[in-house]
Image 1 (cartoon, rainbow, N blue to C red):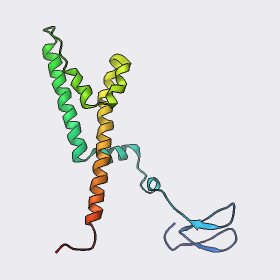
Image 2 (tube, rainbow, N blue to C red; image 1 turned 90 degrees about the vertical axis):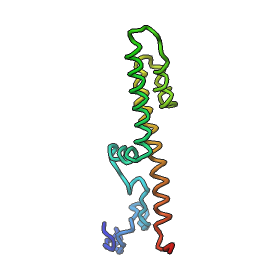
Image 3 (cartoon, rainbow, N blue to C red; image 1 turned 30 degrees about the horizontal axis):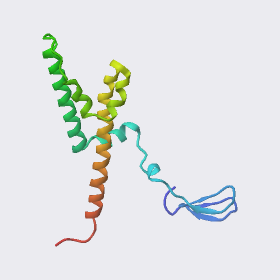
Length: 145
């Protein structure tokens, strides 16, 4: 409802558009929405909101660089028969989330991208929280001049 719209409740009383009538008691109360209801986003929108910022993208870049290094190391040492522990770094960069997937055996490699996305989203949430708080604290009407 738009602001200032008047509606009538079941008893014929007028209520402003900001009030909601309880059908059980007939009493009116103020309609409140949680922060989640106000800012409803689809899953891809929420993921983009938390992943597209410098901190998350930097972390994902580091993970990608480590994975490229691990792949190059595995390809270069595959013919020599010499084992390398470079693959451990992909799990260490995305730990502890990727460590949960190690019990799955070879299918546990899915833990690296899952861990990277989980950590990047967490870093993005922290980044958004800090920057939004900073923007609200400096966005006051008081000038520093």
